[in-house]
Amino acid sequence: MNREELKALLGFLIIYTSSALILMIIIAILYHNNETNKIHEKRTMEIKTVIMSYEKELMQAEMDKVPYEFHPPKDFFNVVLLDKGKKPLFSNVNSQISDLDTARYTFHELSSPINEVAYIVVDEKKSEQEIFKLNFIIALSILISSIFVGIEGYFLSRFLLKPVHSRIDKLNKFIKDSSHELNTPIAALMMSVSNLKQSSFPDRRVINHISISTKLISQIYNSLSYIAFNDIDEVFEESFDLALLIQESVSYFNEIAATKENTITAQLQTTFIHIDKSRIQKVIHNLLSNAIKYSYPKTTISVKLSEHLLTVTNKGIGISEENKKNIFKRFERRSTTVGGFGIGLDIVNSVCEMYHIKVWIESIPNKETTFYLQFPNV
Image (tube, rainbow, N blue to C red; front, top):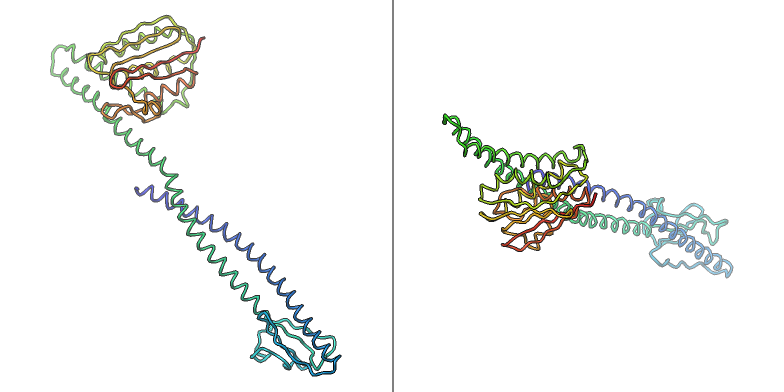
């Protein structure tokens, strides 16, 4: 993972984790407030019940004219019974009333003293314990959830970056392959120009090398410019004879095919189509370029056009069934042992999709490959 990818990963993790944490905190606050209200409501009801039970016991003792006997409360309640001067008469609290945190206590004043008891004080200590327990559970849940979200975010970001990383690798490879592809014809041009400077008379072979090199560079440029400017290029659709355009392309590529001692044969029937001429020319050029590139030396490349069906056949390394699935994807190549950078067939596929041209491949590995293009009738 390079520095930029690490920076993107950390940025995603920070945003993802922070957003999730903020959402969890908001949910936790709402849940805390709701549960706290429930605890207070429950404790209020319980305290009222305790007060009523002590008040009932006091009244019963007075009616029976017997001394009041204090019974310590159950369920962790602390109760203090006070006289008019707020002095403890009965209590299960060790602290003095003056030392008690009165905010934690509920004071209930009797309508009239009973057995000298004027006030019933009940402790709310248990609700504080429940709230503390609630806070602990919420804090622990947020901590565990944050760790889980962080781990999930890490793997999610790696998953999201994987196709980007793959695309970058393909792009880097494409740049290297492009440089290599351009280097060969440029080097040939420079050598040919050097030979011309040293020669008094033009050499036919040198001129031929220059012609081939410029055609190769032109083919690479056309492919790259289509990839770069396809979305903004204007479309000029017209009716024309496809056979004439293919014949021009065959003549154009025969010189390049001759470098491998290949020949291109063409059997073409007059076929009129209505389409952007420059785009379909790129399709034909890329098919012929690939046919030459992946063919064995001293073999024949066959081009046929009949009843709106164009076929381009070469004898060479072929295409496996597995590679057929990805052969039309950008930056995908049939073989790494042959030059190229994997955009030719992507151009073929994009133009065919644009004009509803059906394209398919039949191939026998290490024998021959045929590309089929079925053009719609005008």
